[in-house]
Length: 99
Image (cartoon, rainbow, N blue to C red; front, side, top):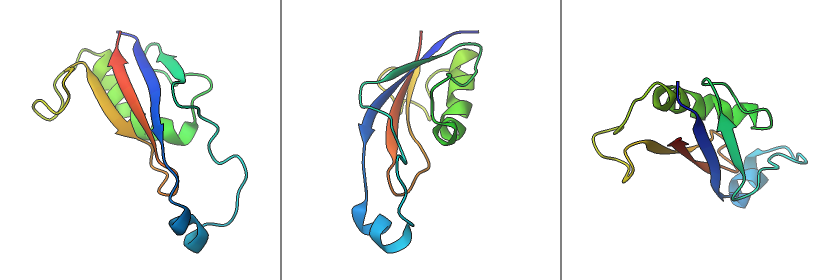
């Protein structure tokens, strides 16, 4: 099974949606752009957000087992995937790469 590197590429915040629909919360996302995590044996890296992992995990597992070329050429690097977490107020984009 291959290791996968998960890199935080971009963070967004939809203030208009949060103001209208979200109860105020502190520290909703402490990830930092450029932060990297390594998944070994398809497992969640220790400090990675559990909610983000739910979105990333199927792609990490597929890449760890050798899958390539998701959706017939979607990514320039066939051994990678760009996946966002499922937080509709502050989505984070992650690049997953096979090592």
